[in-house]
Image 1 (tube, rainbow, N blue to C red):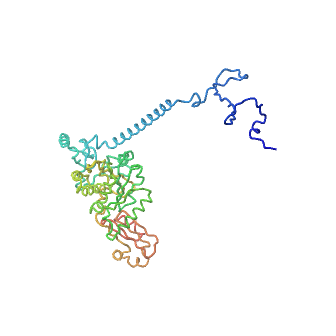
Image 2: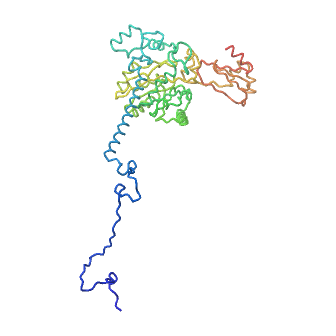
Image 3: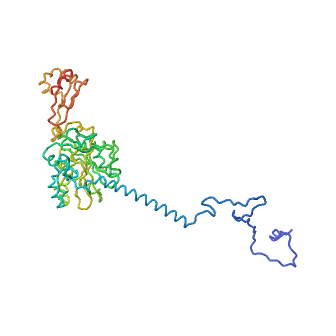
Length: 447
């Protein structure tokens, strides 16, 4: 039986041969699609009796916003954001202007930053009325030194800061909190911060929570007064210790510099770092009170004057230096950079836990070290022989003795190993006395 052709399978019921039909070139199988109607085009069913139409959800269907509406909505949001940012910038400028009003709206003493006036002769910033009018007429108020600064430059100890962290004795014209508030604008502006720390009192002068004052501005850490360290001190080890201590305090800094304003050690490195990182910004010198900011600025200007004529001119009117804490009472603007940006000396941040806050201002010059520190160790055969205690110290060491460091510090030694030795580093004015503990109270009344 012959196999059937393909057409026999496709068309099992063939029409008669006498009928002609069209044979398609391709086989098509077409199905009629089901119509898809929108809700608005659907005819209501027989069961629908209400003629109330159901609205589309917002943003879909006929309620969807057009591209033009979307563009206008985005523009409104953008304009609102711009308005908010503009108001924020205005508020920042107002805060900065308020903090620096002593340097802009009111002429200030170039020595301490206090606003100049002719009212109270005892207050910082006082100038003789005739001198004030003469300088004002010739527009030379920025070259005026107030009466308090003149006395400070001649060695007088005149305090002006009171409150928490302030100082007793004399009149108190400004509080420590007010001085700190004058630095609050720094967190809202772009600036380069040079933070000073006293190497002799590193932890006490470190200024915790500095970021609350300066925000995210970059910081250069400068350690001052390294010329006071003992002669055999390894500065490399000191630098490593400073970096480690700064890391533990969770403060990120650009660099660390060991300096001496007296011998100019390390000052050139600080100048180079400032020129590298300044980038047109203002530079602020920050630190706790009496850490050596004014002396550092003087050394900085002296080094910069070799290459920058602006710094050479600024040296004529540099901030006053004094041993009394609270010498600087307001931000002092210094035109030290030829290429733009200002240098600012700032009021010291007064800390209530430091020695200067509990010692009378008249005693501070005697307690401030002025030369390399030399240690005094005990037991000391010379001191023991003078007090007639050599035999007792030789047998029991320092057990049962009290050591007086001037009239400031008393150390009662209860129990230590016989070979224990104590070494004291401080100014020569502080005499050391060793007495039996049972006679310490009586001895204290004598000294």
